[in-house]
Structures are given as C-alpha cells and as structure tokens.
Length: 268
Image (cartoon, rainbow, N blue to C red; front, side, top):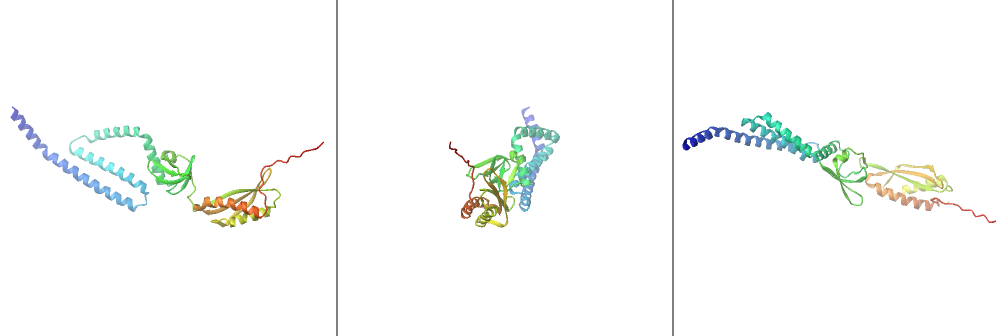
C-alpha cells in the first residue's frame, strides 16, 4: 500500500514538473525583462529635464509596478485566480496607505514642489515663520539653513499648502530703507546727502534710484530710498547703505531727528 502511494506521488510530481519548470523559466524571463526596462527608464530619466530628486521616486514606482506585473503573470501561469489576487493586494494596499497617510501627504507635497518648482536649492525663501537658504529638497521634507546656521526640516505637506516667498527667484532685488531728518534740514540737502550715500555704497546699482520725501512725522521728516542690487549682494547693500546714510548726513550737517520734548519753565 505504501509503495503504491509513493508511486502515485512520484507520478504526480513528474506530471507537474514541466509546469513548475515552465513557471520558473517564465518568472526568470519576466524578472530579466523587468530589470532591462528599469535600465531603459533610468537612461530616459537621465536624458530628460525632470528634477533629479524625482528620479529615485519614479524608478521605485516603475519597479513596484513591473514586479507586481511579474507576480500576476506567474500567478496566472500557476492557475491562480488573478482577479482574487488583485482584490487581496488592493485591500492590503489600502490598509498600508491608511497607516502611512501622513507620509503619503508629505510625498505628495514633495512631488508638487519638485514639479512646480516654486524654489530651488540655494534660494532664500520664507515659509510661514521660517526663513533661510534651501539646502535640500526631498520627497518627504525640505531642509533650509537659517542666517544663524540652524537647520530647519519642514514637512513637504506643510510647504505645499503654505504661502512661500522666494527672495531669490529674480536676479535683482530692491533694498528699501527710510531715513528721518529734522524739519530744519532743507529737502534738497537731505536728498543730495542720500544720493551721495547711494553712490558710495558698494554693489548698489545706481541706474534706477528712488529718493523721495515719504511722510511727515511728529518730530521728523521721513525720506524713502529704494535702490536695486544683485540678489547675492542684498544684505551687504542693505547694511552698507545704512552706514553711508549716517556718514552723508554728518557731512551735510543734516540732523537725524528723534522724538523729544521741550519743557518750558515759568518763573513767578
């Protein structure tokens, strides 16, 4: 009896052996084709203008889809109901997506940033209460470096829905400053002093300078100075112009007024 069962098992095994070998060969061929397709996708991405930060993500998605297709082909060759398998995998995928919902929103935000390109690495941006130079744009988060050398990591979901100010998007940037002078100082004298201050400010572009009286204050007259500079020189021009303005006022004997109170004492 035992020998008969053994013979039946051997016969059954020999019967399905061709199918098993065919399935193995099919799986190997599919995997080889999938790897070759991944190489083709990689080369296409290198030649494309798509942001390099997206390359890894795109290749990962293509890889998952290709291997998912391989699993379906192999399962179908084994006689497994592919429809049921797809349903099971769909439910599993839904469960995983719910578990990592926050991470997926960050990835979606990263894709939005990388495709719309509101800023690039090296740009100085302001996002909410954070501002600094962009050091890295990833799929999950964006890293910026503040002026005092602090690294801030912001989730991409926060950035994609926030108001972003990009101070580096254009080649030039305007420096806007105000100076206050005494009511006793002649307007033309003050404007001449400020024009000289602009002229003496290194890296200030002097072809489009705005110098005008802008407001009457309680104890002073306010003058607005607007001057353009290269983006990279903004802060240098900003602080240099402040210093040159004070020096020019001293040379032209223009008093920089400040709030004060006159007290008159009456003797009886």
